[in-house]
Image 1 (tube, helix red, strand yellow):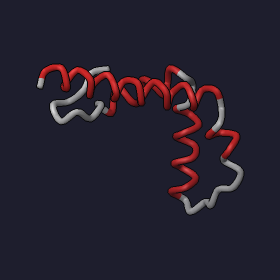
Image 2 (cartoon, one colour):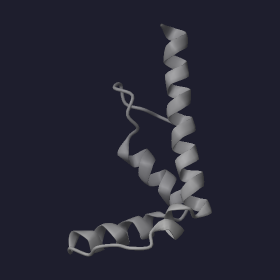
Image 3 (cartoon, one colour):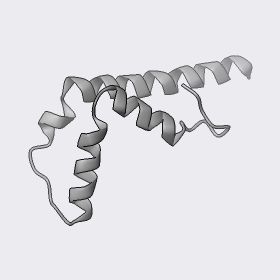
Length: 74
């Protein structure tokens, strides 16, 4: 996972990952509705969806690999 010098992932990478799991449309919809003042209930189905878990796992593993790489350098 490409990172910036400060260790944070690029926004482009995060968008690409969420698009890979077909979640970007859902995230865009939630963002748009929340911007309009919508209050949400029953988000557990989205949070526990297979795609969301895989995306979270991918992001965590990518960050962990980044940290391990820097530990080896130091």
